[in-house]
Image (cartoon, rainbow, N blue to C red; front, side):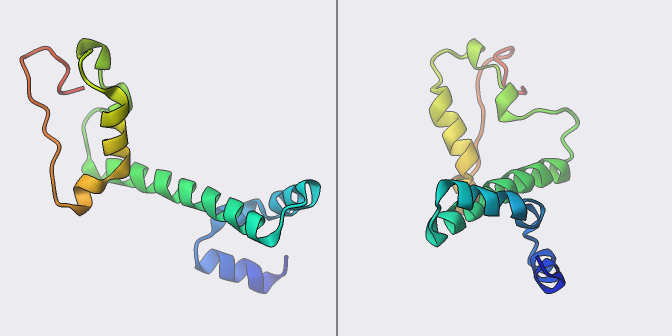
Length: 114
C-alpha cells in the first residue's frame, strides 16, 4: 500500500481497512473473492465497527452514572417482555430518527433502572 492511499484512508477514516488491508487481500486471494464480494465484506465490517463506535460514543456523551445498557436489563424479572423485539427496537435507533422516546413504566423493583 502506498503513502497516498494510506493518507486517503486516514482522511476518510477507514481505519479498519487501513489496519487490515493485507488480511483482506489475503482473504480475497484464498477464497477467490470477486471484487464485489471483497468490497461488500470490507464495507460490512467498516459499517459494523462504526455503528458500535457510534453507540459507545453516545453512551459516553450521555454521562450515565452507571453502566446501564440494554444488555444488562433484567429481562428475567419481566418474563412477558419480548426480549428479542425490545433489543431489536433499541439497536435499530428508529425511535431516534422518528423523534420518539422509549419509556419504561411499572411497579417498584421490576428493574426499570437497570
